[in-house]
Length: 439
Image (cartoon, rainbow, N blue to C red; front, top):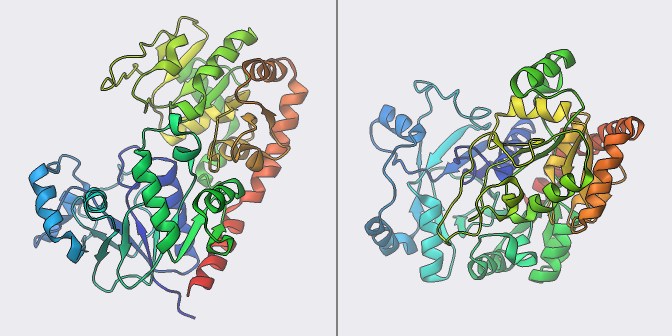
């Protein structure tokens, strides 16, 4: 039986360093492609697709293309009620695209409309309805991997809502809360189906947005690290971490993720200092918040003007020489750090899924996580679960793992088994079941 053609948005895929949602979109395209679904990717990068095939391909990969000007927004809004039409990007291989993290996602065709997703937001603000887009021989199903105010013409439009953190923890995100609520409420009313990634998020969508539970499907996510990373020689990984970072195997704690309020960095640092353990703490993550208050114990400035964005240097060493911060690492180095850590410390305040928990588990590393959001649902009994608002509880968990090798090994083994529940095969089964119902 012929599978329906599926379009996946490139909204997060186009970001230079990617996001957790970019990982979700990449995995989605890969699994659907393996299941036999033809995949189209729809981008909204700043380049236009013109008549010259080579220049169109060059422009698609060129980050220096001119930014959107206010006059262009006004011009586009004059015609956006009629819809937009994306054009196919010729991907011939003439442009070397190996710099793209993980390569381009699995696809048959790529389409682009200049600044599509920015224009769609302005359209929604101006007209109060989702902007319609189309392209030649368009897909049967459009899967939007983020709550975007846009729909594909003559297709079944499904939207993934990963979480409702802007509504549940409004102080922890920079989203325009009024606009976010209006967007997800429109999705709740108009979408052909809603996808989410945990039972916690499903419950939030049903309760906060009033959606019939039959219109919401939890597919979870897959933990799907590349085999060349999973199969690396243990001694090679140890030597890499020791030579590059000066860290000993299983003799440091690790946090990795965005530096933002919901990640609870301030309490993690406070708990680590209170624990008085001898092993260092390594923090890997970009600062995505407007100030660095969560890093104040590291000696990083905070509490500046609203427009200030502080960007501590890579490897910022703190007042306590036992804490190291790295702003960004490629996947190969990050996974080496995870494998060598004594424990990943991830007691975030709320997650729609909590992918770092499973990534650590799949790499054989013990996890300390929080009791809020989807974290306990994903971790089960295979991690140390603490109250993320209780600094003493986090500190005690750090001490327990630091001083007890048997406890560390227990959670390493438990985590490896837990990660198998979120295997690519099980995820593919859930996706196929969802898409079969949408035909």
